[in-house]
Image (cartoon, rainbow, N blue to C red; front, top):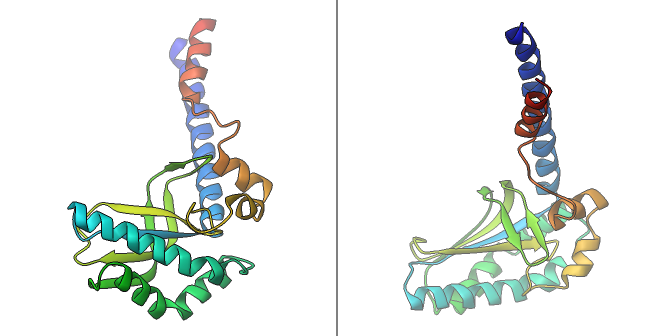
Length: 192
């Protein structure tokens, strides 16, 4: 008798988990379609290479701020980046002391990232990738559109460009991560 009760309960839990995961995935995809991230990779982990990475970061974000501030959406931002990719590369190269630089706009997978005041879920995002030298050092990333990098714009104004659900998703307000299945199983166990 007990086995007959557990099978439907486990099936229901599995279906609920799948629905939840699909919902989270859909939210992440919708959010990622509205963002462009900046990803800068240092040549190595040496102090000098990391310093060059930060100088390139500062120069690139200063260049991008006025270019992207008037963009109405991520498609327009990507178009502006494509149009200015040569200037972005030159700016990064100059800031990195003439070091070889590769710049491309591509899709990249990013881990979940908590910034000051907001968080982004893991997933694939459109990314302006700036690789210094061989690109084997530590990296740095932020959201360049809307400008949520502290170096490239007023994050409050950029935050307002997102809709309410997207603001709630990245701000993490009210989000508590729990193992819902385990909670349900504990409740069911208490019944028997």
